[in-house]
Image (cartoon, rainbow, N blue to C red; front, side, top):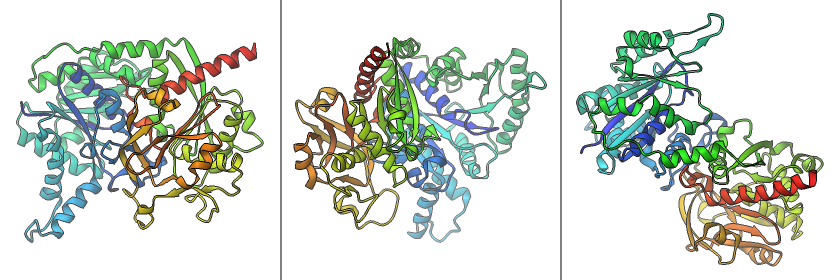
Length: 542
């Protein structure tokens, strides 16, 4: 059958959870046997989020094919357990760039290039792209931003046109809105929803289903009122209450029959009742832990946890796999010093040093790593965290004074971390890094090999600097082993410390591949090591 299209828009305010609703609906449809993918259209003018500060937009999620994308794609992958690609995230900047490049090449034959039809045609082309591959029964398109924003107008106009092009039962529009509770009045208010739907309708798009975010249950009389004023049937007014965890949302949406409403609108046959057994098992383990650990996350963007979204979710997956509650304790690396590191980290069951760019907080990360290395606390380094582990070892074990990464100190006498030779000539930011999936071969007998249980893995990267192999022999002689190597380039991917309970650092980003159904083995084993450390700590305190 030809692919069916679902468009998810949002109104009233941002951060209502369009990504989670989209992922939850996709999960329910996938559990019924349909092949589903989700794409995100972002209204900002950056070509991609690659050059955005994490404080602006949360983490930058990297796909298998090396696309730097919105963090919502992480939710899509974690819920669906299927990989996304460059085609799953499109920005206004990308749309305009494509149109301008075509104009420069003469593709428009001298015509005046306009928002309608040229920009909207390019948006429509990208909206249909995944559906035309033949791989998917259903394509869900999440439109970023809010209805009424100037930036969103071309996307809404493209949806209006597409609905005419596709035909009456080939598409469905879900509008996510807010039903706020006014404490002073003591009641829920529907007016913001009415205004939001009116704005969408004025743009020519009538929603089929309303998903109403609320902190309190929406009574039947209010649902009737919303249905009447917003031109939808009462059973298409879906309640979306605050959930204990985002992983509850698919089950809550199933209870509200969101998937059934969508299938009815799209005239889809009920292939089967959704099979959510493994999902429920995961939730059971997540909510009934038998152990508890405190893990320090040392980073420079800790004021905004969304900057480390995939790491946080990976700990949730790994915690459930171990039936363990993982308490993440956030530490701003700028605030860690030689004097306070012991007081801060002494009671931790594990320490993760997070990825990032730039010099800010670098010294604090080195102090944290020195402390956990010397005090046998389980350590996990990711990307810059791995590079910091190499620099700390070079300085404090090998005695290489001034050892550093050339990112932090271009004039360092000991560049144990250096830029790849083929990157040194590139000055333009964005897309100049080692991005996407690369192969890594693991050394037999190593901790990394035992964690993965196989000799060859593929992991995703996002970095410019690499371990400098000139120092490899000295490192290994002193007990810091390179146990994961890229077979094509010889670049070091994993280092681990001998004679330490658990000291593993990876150049790649394992958090990008952890999903509900496939928690990442590095996180699973790190949490397991933290549980063992917690048992020791508890015994000491008694």
